[in-house]
Length: 110
Image 1 (spheres, one colour):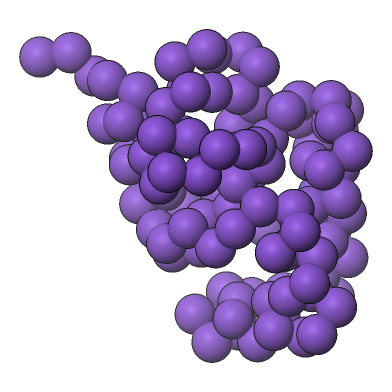
Image 2 (tube, helix red, strand yellow):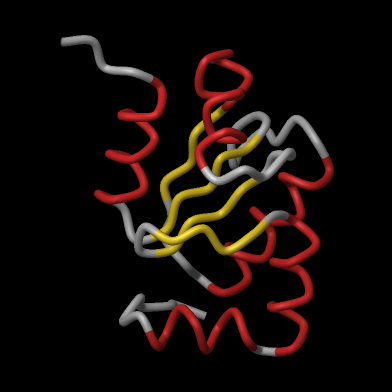
């Protein structure tokens, strides 16, 4: 049985509280939108798993197909798609993101 990109994405988002599909890595983001989301999580002190979509074309396209969202970065919390950069930024600015994470029992160090 082959492990498809969809299977790998489902496994990753199921086994991690927060997953960021991004261009680059948290240390070296390869686009401004990915960098913005990293900064939000770092500010909140949230631990998250990251997947560099530039390393795997199947995952890069697969994550877009997984939830019918055309762009990267993409954020999943407790297996649910939350949004991309604009949504994360808006939720952060209104306090909604922090409330969502705390409501899902995700500890924040900030």
